[in-house]
Length: 345
Picture (tube, one colour):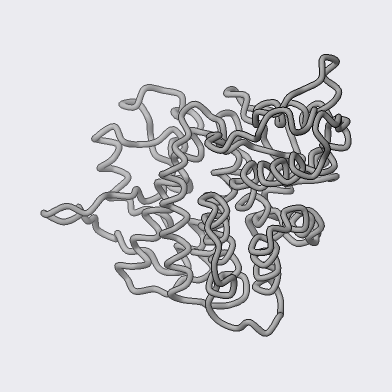
């Protein structure tokens, strides 16, 4: 009973709130009223504070050691319970919110727990991009709260780099420019991950969009931080590629044809066909044989609404085939368990 008190488990069983993921193997597929809790799987549920206060149970407060065990368990669940990733994530996110509330209530400076919770939010938001029930706003709010809590207990290189990446992403999405060193707080002596964010920000400030993407794609593939960084920046990837298209449309001669493979190189895409489709969506003319983008015939659409899309080629690069696994019942493309464990560590 390290993750939930027996009193809460019993109460939630009586109110039919016991989750599929908390039930015994024999009863988990039964109706809610017939489920029986498994003491090794029950996790304290998040409960919103109200005027009358939150219902408390005997033995309700978990130690910091218990909270660390809880996060480890939730990460393991996310890795291996892959039949329906959306349902797993919904359960995990609720329980992580409960952990964060307890950290605040008990005034625990839980760096390890918050760090892992933030990584889970970054990963799951990317994995579910495009899912019919995925609410991006909720995921962004969760990441924001977790990152703010992390900054309250640690202002080290990794935490500040994530803060910088988050703010830089918003700069790109809104077309904002300004003091690049103002996007991160702390030391600017050119070290570590913060230095990388500053270099990335400078490329954006200078309008050097291909350098911006080059820095991202050439980051160290042996560091889990690299993939989390790419996931965060993939949210503004379409905007950066649109800027490259605008520059290219000005640079080439009127009516000049650019082969799809060359356009893919300019846009940091893997396939020429994909680059042709992107350019067409952005408003540029395409040749009849659909092998070329025809420049300076049509302008790049200024008000194009670029929805966030999952781009596994950009995030995982040449290792994509080694990292990606199968699909779940909702056609969500899953990552191999060993990679997710490494990423969330």
